[in-house]
Image (tube, rainbow over all chains, first blue to last red):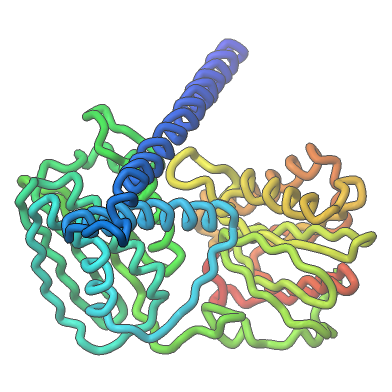
Length: 266
Length: 158
């Protein structure tokens, strides 16, 4: 009887592993299509537009703007691929600096203006944190860029994205809400899974949100989302640091700075 | 005594360097595998949190089954031959004796290190794993030696 139970248990395990293998093959092909569409399409558009920028010809502002949009779009995709490679390669370095959240959000909105305009989105900002705080600005920029881009792309066209920044004693909370159905909460694990598609169909879940989640973790923070009546809210919670950590020993405490005198040698 | 500067690595990082530099980290239930090639004088360290990647999120070196092959690949890409590489394993402490699951994570982290290193035929020449205390380690790449200090429980969280 016990042997039968063990056989059943092992069969289930093999089945699970087999499913994972099939899924992994699927992810590989999805990645190739993703590269083809996300990188090749803007590049094709650029190749078509660039001849119109010939200085001998009078180039319209419209063509120039289109080229600029495609470059920003391509740059965003490359930023994500480079960051994913850094994270997966174990090469992620955190560079802390004192910054204002206002300046990071302004950079994000400037670089996503093409998408915001294309989708007719209105951005509202409520910020109670005016003083600088310590974080890795490049990482936070990419976290916010991915969440806001996600809201623009998959939220309601012509809708509103609310950005709210609040601070408690130890936590900085950024809430980004967009209008739209959003992925259902039961698909939460898939939302942060790279190249995942839920049973609801393609929600465009590429690598952006999985990168944002990993980057939040690297800043000792958490990324989560909630869905309520036609509104999706992504919540970024970050620890507020009182000083810039020593680059050689983040998480500084006495133990980290103790010398290795009297240490065991192995 | 370390003569070169030391690079501190966090969870999910993998670092390979050469003498006289050193690599250091702090471990709780996490495990660090240190690899050293005495022929080339290069070595590397990883620092992982959990034994296996569960297929969710990015395939990061926060997981032993990703971090260890990644470290071996980095060593071999710098010219090391697996037969010359020596391994040392640290960490995997049971940080909270009331939490059975945590105890299992530390143990599983240690087991996965042994399993994968065996698969690559890399011998483990030293190990300080398990127990109830966190550890601070510094890997001296000039001599391939690891200096280790135990932490009080309150100092470490992972």
